[in-house]
Structure formats: C-alpha cells, structure tokens
Length: 235
Image (cartoon, rainbow, N blue to C red):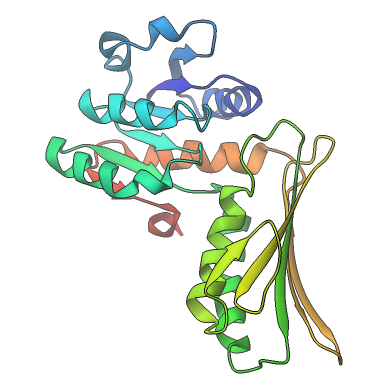
C-alpha cells in the first residue's frame, strides 16, 4: 500500500517505521517546511493518507483528501465541531474518512470499560466522578481528544452530569484536570470518590507505538472503502 503522511513529526516518524515494517511504501511526507507539496497530484499517488498534523490545519487537510478521493485516516483532534460538515462532504463526494480520538487498541478497550462503569455508577449519587489527563508539553489541545471522548461517555451514562469543564467543578459538571509535563505519551484517570471509598480506572501509554500501529491498521482497513469509519469497526 502507498501511504501519504500528512504531519511528519514524532508520530509521523513512528507511523513510518511501522508502515515500512508491514511492507508499505511512503510516497509523500508533509511537514511545516514543505506544505506546498500537499497538492492534488501528489495526494492521488497514495492509496491512503494518514493525517497527524495540527488542530489548525486538520480540517482543510481532511477536505483536500476527500475532494481528491484519497481515503484518509485522521489522528489529529480539534476538528470534531465540524464533524457534520465532514460527514456531509464525505457523502457528497463518496469519500472515505477513518476518525478516532485515539488509535491505541488499549485505549479503545478502555473506552468500553469507561462506558460500562459509568452506566453502573449512574444510580450511586454519593460518588463524585472526575478525570485527570496527563500529556507531554508539546501537545497543543486541552483537554486531549481522548479525554473528551471519555468525558462524553460519562455524560451519556450519568444523569447528574450534563457537561465537562477544565476550569472548575460543579454538581452538574464533570471536571477534567489537564496536566502537561515532560514527554508523557498519555495518561487518563477516571475517579469515583465517596466518603467511604474510591473507585479508579486508569490507562497509561508507555510510548507512541500503540497509536502508530493502530493508525497503520486503520489505513489497511479503509483502503478501498467509502464512508465514515472508526476504531469500533475494527474492534
């Protein structure tokens, strides 16, 4: 399979290493220094594009891929407010977009555990739920896309929580404490606290390899397909 890498930072290089080990070919590598090479002609040389750029450029990159009929795997977060727009464009242009806030298999299993625990805890109002997420200092978005997914799962299952916030907790607000330090790949902690005890679940990423492998597997999956796809299709 021929891959285009839109975003060639640390994640892009991890993806490249895994893709090459799986006998794929990298035909295009885009970073901030060669944005002029992200043309329709160059994109169409690839079977699939993998997008790990920045929240500021991701939306236009997705649109460009859809318009050139290049299936795209999107790892960058920060564009989900425009999800309906991309869904409509994908339908109109018969495009293919694979989206996930986190491509790690472990995290996606963690999503399942989080939803189930929140469903169980809904009737126990004496437990206050909160979240903490820790990432490296280079991460641009706060909170992380993974944290937002986890928060939305909790809100969907716990009636007493109607929104999330990184600013201040309130009875109806799920508080997300966001920490940026060192080179932490990603840690997410969900805590249910009561006067009697605490219940806590946690996912800790040791490196970026799990994210990169998931992105390559997603690219293998979406080749030749149309429409919107996510990690739930693989799991």
